[in-house]
Image (cartoon, rainbow, N blue to C red; front, side, top):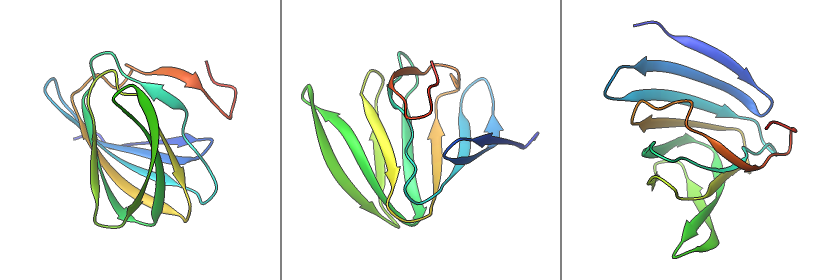
Amino acid sequence: PMIRGIPKPWGEEIIFAHTERYAGKILNIRRGESLSLQYHERKDETIYLYRGTLKVILEVDGRLEERLLEAGEALRFPPRTRHRMEALADCALFEVSTPELDDVVRLEDLYGRA
């Protein structure tokens, strides 16, 4: 498989699998950095926090709630679920999902991305 590293303003994304049926990534998020508040129309994803402490803003019953994830915990973001991740310590997490990697609707972004 073709492994691709993609620099991001919050750290780095490593895509290690991308087929017509699934995708796999490693996200390295620097302490104090945050991904955009976003949702996906079709993409269904689950994260597993391998290292670090992650603050997750997650839509539950139409409201945004805050959750703290420690290493060894996992969380699913079904399609259309608003979510944001912020690293409270340097984080490494695995993301597995359906293959629609470009399916991102950003609602807020600290780095000015559309």
